[in-house]
Length: 184
Image 1 (tube, rainbow, N blue to C red):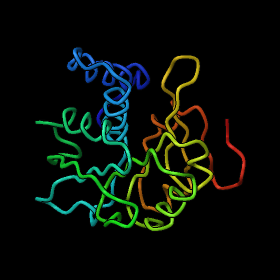
Image 2: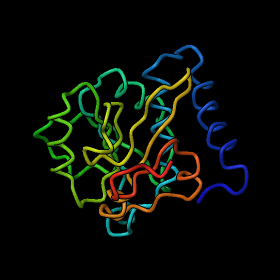
Image 3: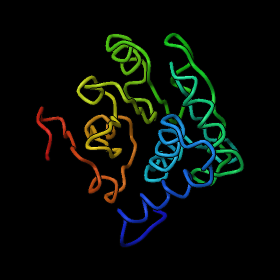
Image 4: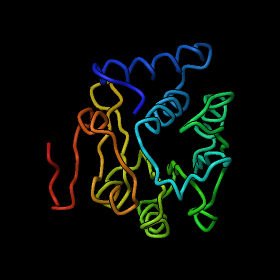
C-alpha cells in the first residue's frame, strides 16, 4: 500500500491535493472524482484482473459531470502503476470490463441490477446512492455534517476478490461485514 502511518491525514491530504490542483473547478463532481480516484489507491486488485501492460479502466454510469471531472483528475496519473482510462457505461453495457464502476443518477432498482451484473467480478463499485452497500455495492460515498464520508461492504469486496487496505477500513464511517449490521 502506498502510505504508512497517519493514514487518515495522508488520505485526506491526497484528496485535498487533487482538489487543489483543480482549484478553478472545485465543484461537487470534481470533489467526488478526486475522492473516487484517491479511494481506489487503497484497493488491491487480483493480478489476473490487472495483467501487465493493461490500463486501469474506471467507468461511470449515469453521472456525466463526475465522468468529466474524473477524466480531468486522472489525466497523466497512474493507478496501480497503470494509466487510467475513463469510460461512460450504461446499465446494459460491458460492466464487468471495468476495474472501478461509479454509479450515480440511477434508481435503486437499476443500481441493484448493476451490482448483480458485476457480482463476483473484481470490480470496485462506488456510488452516492442511498443504501448502496446493502444493495451489494462495495462503497457508498455521502456527505455528513459537511464532510465527505463513506461506508464499505467488506463481504462484497471479498466476494469480488478485492483487498481493501486496513487504513481504508479504519477511515470508513461504517463497515458492513455480511452479518447484516454495520460494525460501527
